[in-house]
Every structure is written in structure tokens, then in C-alpha cells.
Length: 294
Ligand code: RIB
Image (cartoon, rainbow, N blue to C red; front, side):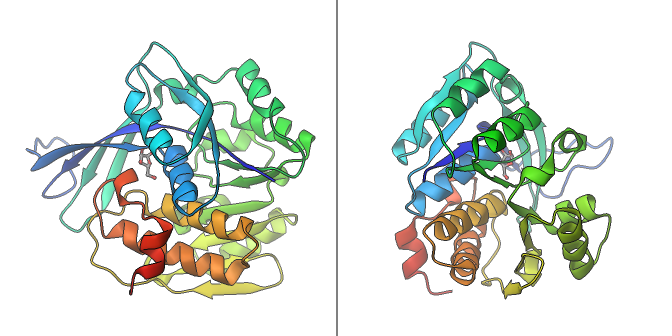
């Protein structure tokens, strides 16, 4: 059983600002930093740092060497990552004094997957392998259909939650990992219990991990609910905290450690990520997580 993460790779241009920019305002940033990111890449690196071998598939642009190096340095298999001679995916991220962020995403090469690319990648995987997806690449609907037909187990982080997801047959997903905003968007409800009930009714074949910000996280499979509190830390930058949670949950879950342990280690790892700047640089290694006293 292997895990393939078919997802985005972005260069993140992170501007530290006094406050989130307002309409019509010009504001000088206090600092500019460039980090490797992208929900896909962050989640692959989180899984790898959590100790699980991971295959990443996707497309970088002419500016993507740093992204490929980050994958290689962390032991992520990139034999299914292609490079095109055009502008790659990137973001403009504002981080304010409280460590909260807002992100403008330019899809670039993340939106250039062809059906032939997908067929070629999935050809190398088989029934029982896991496929992890987010919503920052094109052809998500096609990837889901093809992987499901092969018998792969599909895990979706429906982020960002937008109209593209409506084209996907989400009945083919076996596990959703989502935050409270995505939960509200998908369920049309604001209350945590209502979100979970609604989703479980809509997708009876799936289980859910709903992260609730400061209120922690909850797992629900339609029968049992398991709660996890957050580990409190000083917030520096929340970028990639959700991706760290996803990668660590997946790694522990795939090792068969059970949901309780997977939630706990994911919460701890994402707390460490929140206490550091940037996407990839903030993702802890398993050794760091194990020895952290939070
Ligand atoms: O989830 C954080 C990520 O979202 C950032 O690294 C950025 O690239 C955006 O995709």
C-alpha cells in the first residue's frame, strides 16, 4: 500500500504587514520572504517528515527548481512531477501581526494537467493504494473517477472549497479532511454537529475529520465521534498548519495507529507549524513532534 499525493506546488511570496490590506489602500510591507508551499507540496512534505514514503504528482513551472529540491531534500518521490517552460503556481500571502494570513493564488502550471498526464501517473498505482487530493489542481473530477475505477482509496482535503468541486463525484471519497469554513460551505450549516450530520448523510460511505480552529478537531464516521483539543502555542504564522495536520493525520492513520493517536499527533504537529514562519519551513519532523512538550 503506497500513498500518492496529486497536488499543487507553489512558490509563496509572504509579505509581513501591519494589518490585512483594505480596499483602495496602499501599505508598505514590513518584510518579504519567499517559501516553498502549495497545499499539495506542504502535505507531501508533512507526510514525509512524519515518516511515510510519499509519491508526489503535479507540474512545476520554469521557476520550480526550489520546489523540486524541497521535495528531494525531504525524500518525497518526484518521478511523477513534470516541469513546463511557463510560469508556475505561486501565491501572494499577507501575514499580519496576529499571524493570520490571506492568500492570493495564481494557479499557473498547477492548472495544466492533461488527461494523458493523469493516465500516465495513475498507471503506476494500484487497488488499495491511497490517493490524497486537494483542490488546487485542474482535472480533479477526472483524477477521482480514474483512481476510483482502479480501486484506490481517495482522501480529499476540499481546499479551497469552490465551484470546481461540484464537477467531482464526491461519493467516491472515503475520507474528507476539512476545516470549519469548508465544512460550512459543503454542508450549508454553521454548527459543528450539524455540519458533521449533514456531511455523513450526504456521503454515507465516507469518514470526516473536521478541524475547528481553537476548538480543536473532531473525527466522525457516521457512528462514532472522537474529539481532539489543540495544543496552545504563540501564533507566528498559520500558513500550512492545516496541511501539516492533514499530512500527519494521514501518516499516522496509514500506519494503522488508530484515529485517536492520528488526531493527537496531527494536532501537535500543526501547533508547532503555527509557531513558525512560512509553509514548508514550519512543518516539523517526527523527532521534533515527539520531543516537543506543549
Ligand atoms: O495551505 C497553505 C498553502 O496554501 C500555501 O503554502 C499556499 O501556497 C496556498 O496554496
